[in-house]
Image (cartoon, rainbow, N blue to C red; front, side, top):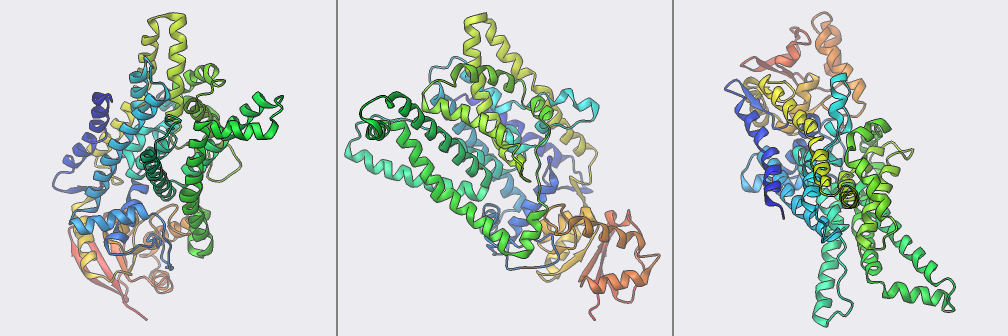
Length: 536
């Protein structure tokens, strides 16, 4: 394994967070996220549910409550671990992210080595897979933010930079798609090992189902398509044989790679698909979860975006595909089928298309390795320069991703940092309010309240708040118009059954708080005032 490349990845996904933490100074607190803090805080909110002892996910960003369901169990489990270990939630989050990244780096190398054991450019391909993003930097100056800046699940590096469940899910998917044909004569002691291996595959499939349902669907499609290819190849070779169908069955039984893929497919169906099926039923049977899921849409980016965001690996992959698509090695078939199916499935008429991009950079960079070997026969040693150039062409995007986070840290971007007064107020809320209390806050503050206190908010997240646009407008209008129309504000608090009004620096930007008889100040420190709303 190229440990220097792996160490570089671990440093690049760790040092920026450390410098952002140092940049907080004495007046601010780093929120813990440099990319997509909106979803990052929602993961902390899920961990908080586990920290307080719950196992069901119950939409903390929505005022209404329900029985919930066993969803997002990975983060809820991390919350339980944080409580048992006495560690802060954000610390456990990043520790899990680093450990999952180390696993992914090892699995990726095993995948590439198994794919092409004698590959001369495996290290370069590994570097491109681990560090490469795309050429979206070409569109950045014109105001276009392409997928290689934010679709984290598609790239190993961006996944590792963002959160642990993307990384662990990708590691499990790559491991499940790594098929190592063994010798055909298996001694009896090895059969026990095979059963243990099948049990591990079943367990990994179930975990993958909880982490990334679309990775399960993609994995099933890949393995199923590869099995169809093997059957078709067997039929072509035997269709004129007098043995007929029985001969085809016999040849498939003798095809050990076919049997290995079939076992993976069955385990993925029993383990992963069953978890995905539970998730689908849970989302549809609970009206509140169904309303949340209905607005959780992730459409695919335009084709020009994908072309730019996955090049130059995509361009090399097309050349590599032309060289290997007729080859019969099972691992090679899996790689090119993965690339082709993912690019096709991402444009299915479906509201969550983008989710099929999970890990797409892996098969594209793997196919690029075969392109480099083919080019070596045409341009000789200059092919190494081509490989290095392909890697270097992705560095501006990598650098921009890192710099954007650092610029946000230097500017103490309010999406990345809390004021010291807000942090102290959150601590007070945790200690002095009921666990099911409902708070009225500005939209940005609403993102942090469930993550840092576990309390519910009227609005806090564009997807996990049911009727998000309506609730965001209602919250913003309250603070903007409360001083001018106190009677309407009073009526709003009563109808929405608000327990507390949080009035800090973000709320002050929206408007002034009027003096209402229903509101009593119960906390006022460091620029934050918390009002208790009197009951009817």
